[in-house]
Structure formats: C-alpha cells, structure tokens
Image (cartoon, rainbow, N blue to C red; front, side):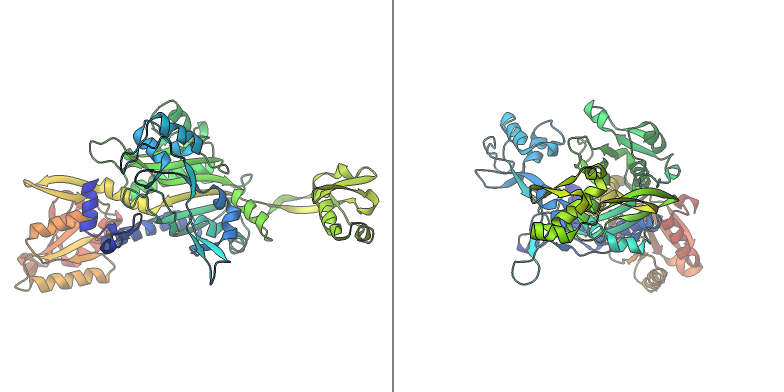
Length: 579
C-alpha cells in the first residue's frame, strides 16, 4: 500500500535507514510514532505471553559462537534458494519468482532442482531487467551473517537468525531457576538477523528484525494446557487437508478443532487460541487472518506440527496478500537433544514417579588390568562401549565373549573381563528430555499489519481525511491537547493540562499550530483516539471538549474528571458513547 508507506514516512512510523547515503535494502528505522507503537506491541506481547502465563524472560546476546549453530543445524539447513540474473547480475529468491509469476503457492518447499525446472517450464524472467532465467542454476544460500569474535578470525561467530537458540543453549541454568519443575516457559524479545536475498515490502521482510518468542518446556506424558480457557475461541483455521483440496479457511472453536481435528496437538491448539484473542485485542482484523497448517513437505524435519498465523495486507480491491505473522510449532526434543549431544551438559529434567519403582539395572566394571595391556590406548574406549551396551542390550553379555565396535573395528572381549552384573535398584524417577512448544512472532510484521488494518480513508463534513483506527491501548499517542487559539490564557491552560495528563502516565501531544480542523486531521493520521480542546467555556466552567477520532463526536468533560476518563477509555473500561 503506497499510501500507507507514504504516511509511515511522513508521520514518523518507519523509513529506510541511511537515505542520505543512498540507503541499504532491508534496513529500516522506526520513527517517533513507530518506535512507540513497536514498544507498545512488545509490552502487550510480554503481558499476555509471559507475565499472564507465569513465564520468565531473558535477554541473550545477539552474537553466538559457531558451535551453537552447528549443534542447532543452522549451518547446514538455514538456506534460501538463490538465482542470479545473467544480464543485470541481481540476485533473487528463486522460489519467490516462481510464486510471483505462476499460480504455484508455497514454492519454498521445493528443491533447488525442482525450482530450476519451474524457471524453465514457465519462462520465469528477472523482475529487474526482464532477462530470462531458464538456464540459470539455483543455489542454496545460507542466510546467517558471519563475524569474528575477538581479534583475528579464529573464533568464528554468527549474528543470531532467531532468538530461540539463546534460550536453548542456557537451558541447564534456566532449568535451575525453574527448580526443575515442568512445565515452564522462557520468553525473549529482541533483534535477529537474516541476510535476505530479496528484502521487500518495507518492514515485512528485512535483514534486521524483531522477534518475540516463547519456548515452553513440558513432559508430554504429564503436562496438559488449560484448553478450557480457550475452548470457545473461534479461530480461522486453514488445514493442510483444506489446502490440498483448494478449500478455504473456516472459523472453528479451538475446543472442536482439538477434539476432532484438524489440530492434533493440545498445546498447539492452546496457543492458537491465545494468539487469536491477542490479535483481536491489538487491532488486527480476524476476518483478514488465517492460521495455516504446514503441509508435510514444508514442515521442518524436527516439527511434530506447525501452524502459521498469516494476515492479508493487501489494499482495498486487491487480491489477498498473505504474510506470515507467527509460527506455532511443536519442536519435540530436537533442540535440547542436539545441544546435549554437542556439549558436556545435561539438557534433561528429573521427573519423579508417583510411586518408587524397583527395577533391574545392568552395570559393568571392566577389568582394566586385563584390558590395558591387551588394547593399550583403546582400553578406555572399549570400557565406554561396554557401558553403553549394558544399558541397551543385556543379552549381549550372555555368551562367553562380548562384541563391541571401537574406531570402526569389532573387538571381542571375554565376558568375565567386563564385570557385567544385574542388580535390583529402587528408582524414584527418571531423567527425561522435555518437549518444546514454540510460539514465535515477528514484531515488525505485527506492527505493519496493525497499520494496514487500521488504515482508512473517509469523508467528514465534505472533506476527505486519512485515519488510523488504532485501538486506544495501541495508539502511540492517546490524546492531543489543543487550545482553541493561543491567546487570552487558553494556551497556558492547555499546556498546563497536557503536563498534568503526562504526570499521571498518559501519552499526550500538545499542538497549537494552525486551524483546529487541521490539528484534528494530523492526529487522525497518526491514530490518536481522542483530542481535548480548551476553549473560552473552559475558563468559565472548568470543562473541555473531548473529540472521538472514529466518529468525530464531541462531549464536554470536567477537567477534574479528565485524566480518569481518558484512562478508562484507554483500558476499555469505558466506551466513548457512554460519556
């Protein structure tokens, strides 16, 4: 929406960074109103997803060493499909070109070879210069920004491509803060970085962006969400089955969707319900939202189930343009298991049984006096292999010798030298690797969607105006305070009133420039819900005019009651038509 982009730049919501130097694609600066709106979105997210749920929040570094991303799989599997134009040498997301120039959707799930075939089959051309791309190779391009930690280049690091790894890496310590009790959640809001091939759509797809993520650790055999609290929430669900059949999203209650499908995971269903209510609260139009289930081909290999919240950000009369706002995924034990395998730390939680259990436990105590002279430096590895075998296959010790594999070779050890024994032990619990449910939200895309859905043009008294119909809770400025004119003491009283409202924590702007109608229009454009005008009647009876942005209706309110009235309007405890 060009009109929205122009308004965002003119009114200080967001604009391209460093335009004096030509700008750099994929980097945007939030202006005064945009920074406030972003902070408000983050505060609303923190209140609903962390504070109200009883979860903790951390703030991890944005740079981490290479080993972290080797364990997480980002070094090998965090790629996009790149094609370079032979004529203008511009690089493009090959799957986006296919989606933009054909009827094919979700091309991201295709392989590089399949995309190459589609480029040729459909005659895909370069969007910059129009040159054909049919003969060009499609390559995997890793999206992470690489850097060196400290002097030199021996200690390689990367800017984080998501905030989640900062939580997973320090799980052993976070587990202690939670006293080892499941379920518990850890939230984080912060910046992440992806070296996007083709940044586009203003703050929708950038190279530096803001995320809000929650990692909920739980035992799938013991822990259940509070489904009853969201059972009656109606969410627009677009199941994988409906996508395959070229169907449409349908509103279903969370209770019904979890009980009979298409949502198979209780925790995923719970967070879809929470997200639906939260989006409605912050001003996103649910009639322009859908929760789309990942199909098998596009689902990450570690994800048990995943639903994306998507919003239509098209302009009036245009075909829908869906962007991803959030992903809600069951990541299983993938992350914690991989970090445990790559470190000496234990990424597990002790789960206590309801009743102590007596079990048979196998153990080995290898005779190192015999193994040492026989196998030398391999003796320690043989002992470790015997310990692993005793845990997994007791029957292997029933014969006269035990076979273990060390350094690719099979070694036969006399059973009597293994010290194998089985004894009864009483166990009070076991070490388990928690499963993870991850609601991950893009703050910038949420801000953009709020602005798109709030943007409106109408006519008041024969005059066209642009208005952002933001909920009072989300508006960067709650109230504009104006003197009818800056003379006869009106300006002084208006300035004092603005200061008094700020002192009680309300967001206020003061404006005495130009005609009163133009001042109203300026506030309408930035979404200010209410305007207060000090006039000559105010000097006589201590009342002011309060104007509603959406209806332009006006009522008189006593100055002594004004702060409490505005606070109630902001919190939703009072509607304007009740004044």
